[in-house]
Length: 187
Ligand SMILES: Cc1cc2nc3c(=O)[nH]c(=O)nc-3n(C[C@H](O)[C@H](O)[C@H](O)COP(=O)(O)O)c2cc1C
Image 1 (tube, helix red, strand yellow):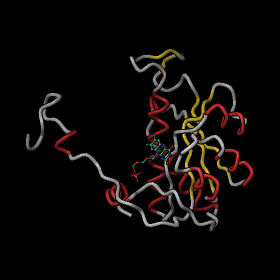
Image 2 (cartoon, rainbow, N blue to C red):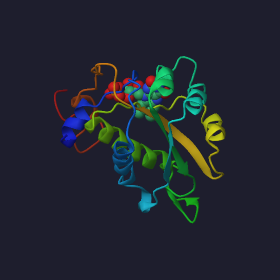
Image 3 (cartoon, protein in one colour):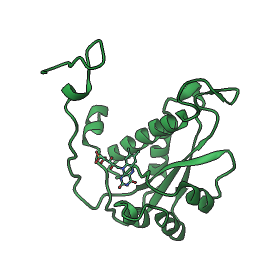
Image 4 (cartoon, rainbow, N blue to C red):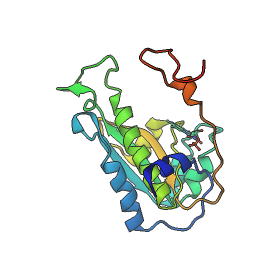
C-alpha cells in the first residue's frame, strides 16, 4: 500500500477476529517500528508481544473504566506493549537538554508506534493506540525492568468491523503561513 493511502485510510480498530497473526507478519509490523527515527538515534523503545490470554486479560483490567478498547485488548490475538528506556531521548549524559525535560521518549515511541500501525494497516491488520490505562500496573504485570516505563499498547489482529471515518480539522485551521496565526487559506 502506498504511504499516503495508508496514512489516510488507517482507522482505529476496536473489534477483532480471533484469527491468529503469524510470526512472519508480526515481524514485518515490528520491523516497521524498528526503522522509526529517534532522538540522536537512541532508539529508546522496546516492545512486549503478548499472545497469552491470561496476560491479555490482566492488561485489559488496567484500562480506564469506560475505555472503548478494553474488549479489543482481551480478544485480539496479539497485544503489543510499547516501553521506553528513560533518560536517553532528549538527554545528554542522562540530563535533559530542552525545555521538554526527558519527555522526548514519548515522541520517539509515538513515531515507532505510528510506523507500526501504518505497516499493520498495509498488511490488512487493525490496531488502536491505547494510552488510557494504569502504566505502573502494566509494568508490574509484564515485569518491565527498572529504568523503563510503559507508554502505550495496541491490540493487533484482523478487523471485525468496517473502519469508521473520523473527522479531522481543516488545513486552514491548523497550518499557518510565515507566522503563527497567519492562515494559509480562507480567513
Ligand atoms: C496517544 C493516543 C492515545 C489513545 N488512547 C486511546 C485509548 O485509551 N482508548 C481508545 O479506545 N482509543 C485511544 N486512542 C485512539 C483515538 O481515539 C483515535 O486515534 C482518534 O479518535 C482518531 O481516530 P482514528 O484512529 O480512527 O483515525 C488513542 C490515540 C492516541 C494517539
